[in-house]
Length: 304
Ligand SMILES: [Zn+2]
Ligand SMILES: [Zn+2]
Image (cartoon, rainbow, N blue to C red; front, side):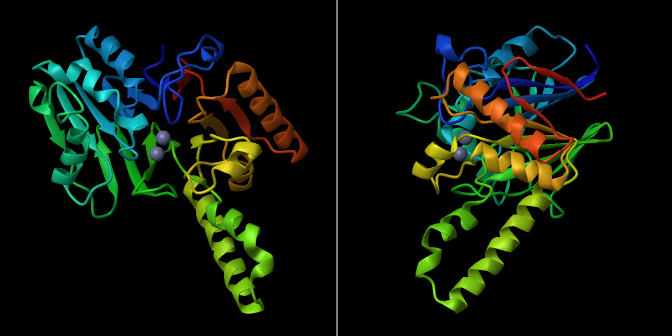
């Protein structure tokens, strides 16, 4: 195995999907490990972080890691109460996520383990736990890795992360409704007067440009692609993207490699294959060089 890689430990959104028909893609919720030698950066702590923790326990050369959370919805933190390294004294675990200060991040991480929701609180974590302060320039260094963060379009404060690793840019945007404004305007466009139409057209353009900026320059983009167009119609405003929009944005922004991510737990392996094939056909039609994949649990991508 190379010494710089990323590994998908959980690829589902919303809730875990441990069903036989889904296991080709995987059932655990959001968690991606980015590894450079003995430096471990973990993006989100859904149920996928549980098997990651178990594996790390067997690697005696690693006793330190940084967990960066996009936000605090359950599917992104629910693996933490079962993350074994947190309960072991010689571990050093750093957290970062949305919040005005380290204390606020600590409160959000701890809340899910309070009574009556869980039998033990984070005071039973024996590891040395640190919560990082937000950086003024939104850039944080971690050994050979660095990352910055920015708000994305998802209910509550949610971050997208741009990770610099070995000269490559990995962008992790697990939950983001990439064209929320544009889509919602389209619905009621004909009811607007001319002035409102002009204003909305302008806002729509701005939103589109901001979405391109968010993912531009990605060697690897891991992005929300939760819904088919049919399901997206029913769930506008929930903060997730239709996979077609994700693919089109990646093409337009010149992304090199796209991993469709945060899969809806209702979609089995056959449904995911349809999404994949349709995505490839969009890329062919547009004569784009974008490489597109379905993020699958257990998949390892070299970063060397
Ligand atoms: Zn989510
Ligand atoms: Zn969410």
